[in-house]
Image 1 (cartoon, helix red, strand yellow):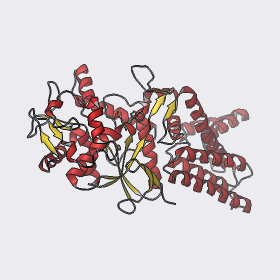
Image 2 (cartoon, rainbow, N blue to C red):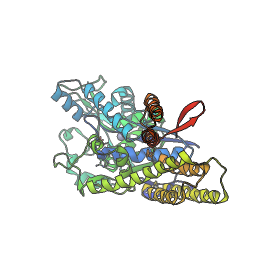
Image 3 (cartoon, helix red, strand yellow):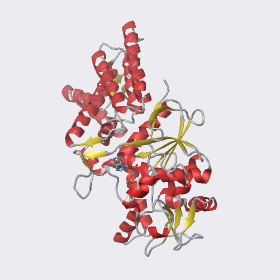
Image 4 (tube, rainbow, N blue to C red):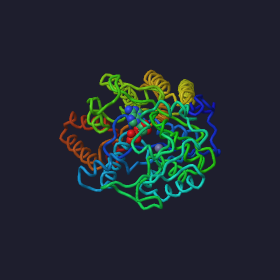
Length: 471
Ligand code: AMP
Ligand code: ZN
């Protein structure tokens, strides 16, 4: 079956057909780096990383671009508070963000562009927009996008321009008297005291927020891309404005599929730092393995709001550990299992295990329904726990383990921990065991063998001495 994606643009599920066969060009709006990332930011990271992993599993080469917004009011404010350059702040939090991503097993993007490194491309696109009549310079040097000149404005958010103009007071911000229309938005703005700035023909200044994504997407993926994604708060105005900029400048449709994750709430309330219901990814990581957070995020469909609570995290922890324990058990059995070909019963059971893979794919093909996909993994785990025993052969156990790991890998869930023991430590324990045996302390010798087995290390007593290997 083909993959179906819910497209915000059409408000329908559509069959996924990439622009170029076998390739996917994907752009995901990344965080503004003025602080650590919070668990709301983690949702698009985990969700779209899983989309990417599934597309790769399906055989697509995915070019995945995700930016860091490294120039912005909040970064500048923080820099001024600390008395350092804005770059010091953004670099610090890019590094911290990358650490959190790694702990959540979010793959690094193919490219992580930075806004401040792409100013030249932004100036070029703004110039093109002015030349084509889509943008104008106001008296103080601000450059605005002339929203009404883009006839399809509102097509993504399904908003009507007249309603927007009449109803949205927040658009009537200061300086709007310079605008031809309250809906016009900033492409370039004059510098203020204490702010980083770049030279341009309009004024010394810095870019508006929306232009960076249009420019980076064009530079790293081309004028037309397959998937553009982010949280649902970005639909309007950010993505609407990106479409207006890119399509007006390039004269081509921008992204074919627009995907948006719903929000994460805390205890059924909007997450808010000032109200105290707020968590950094880092602080969750102090209490839980961040794989549990990943599991939690995937337990809901990405288009449904997800509610974070201590109770639901405990449930996620139990769910995740059930898979980990099942794999541990397989490894334990593998340590002792006889090497023999599959018998007919094992063959049949493995074929049945394969059906879970098909069902997992069916769930993911349906607009990446990770909630259903995790439910299938649980059924597979139950099947494994029922059918793997100390009477099973090695090939059979290995076959079961491969199926579990195939599906958990697509979800980006690490369920098999690398043994946390170094070669030197293993050698030392083996020497201690030999000494215990010599002293006829067999209880101690057995305890050491067991301890090593728990860490995935198998010992074999041979005529040449003790040999060991990792399970
Ligand atoms: P920001 O740094 O605010 O631009 O956010 C980076 C990404 O996180 C964007 O895709 C936002 O839509 C997303 N995001 C922010 N808060 C939440 C939340 N509470 N739930 C889900 N996504 C969020
Ligand atoms: Zn963006």
